[in-house]
Length: 388
Ligand code: FEO
Image: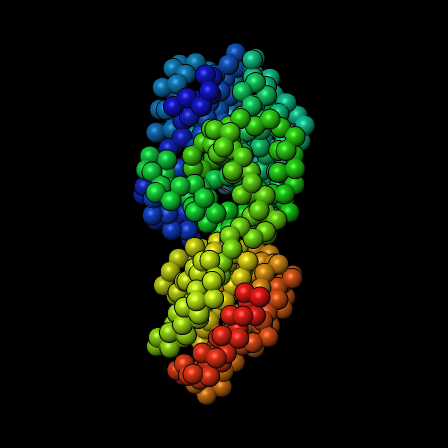
């Protein structure tokens, strides 16, 4: 596959992976992208997951035949991209390894060597000339690990963006939801904590004329519309801005009564003109879908049961996920249930109080076992407060 006349795609698709990074469900598989730049000097951009070393090397050979590789550029050391560095180094003994200093120290940990005799250490502002193409390196610490660099090909105006602008899903199956949904779940699941660092990278990217984004996962973004859209979405996500008008309702329910309250509340919101209500059962739906919706909308409703004089475990887990990703600048409504001593709202408030600019509505709906008319009246008040 041609990215440009000289830049070829040599990545692989993984349909065997059960959980990406040990926790993310990827029903449409996962792509590990790698590229080769064919110039006077040949540069390979990253490797792929450990299970695909032979397939990847075969794709590389298919592009360059028996030619020698001059450089392997390692943008990120997480093993979904770097697992084949040692294998590559053995197959191409004359190639230099190009990476940040921190990446070489991680190589020592992974492979027992930091390639001192064949390495080129690069940092922000350094360049690597290949002939017609020159790569300029930009530091991108914590997008997604501390050693990350991205590179920009000045000839073809291609940004090799490491994990940035990545997406769940293999590239050989079409995603009926388009780019945003799984790119957003990927962003908030993996990089969401590091908004300020992503903002710093976007500021640097703003100074570049980017025609194409080549991420390490998901499709290459190759049209001006795709590039502008992805940059815009990353700006919203990394600044913790509101992407869509609407309310996310996240609930847990043991016997269906809290679920019934959550559903009634959704109905009330819609009757009051709320443009979108996204509902999720935290015990049964994908946790990371609900995390992305928590960030997507400006308003969140948490409905849960009291459990061991506190918050039901799946709800506590959800709130802590938000907390770790610097959830902020949002309005939150609470619905609690408790048969003899409702305590969930108190527990949720304590967790939410640690977050920046999170406003909890004064009206709290307290269900004692099953929803009553008084609860519905409380919900009307909560909906007005939330939407007001
Ligand atoms: Fe795709 Fe952070 O590795």
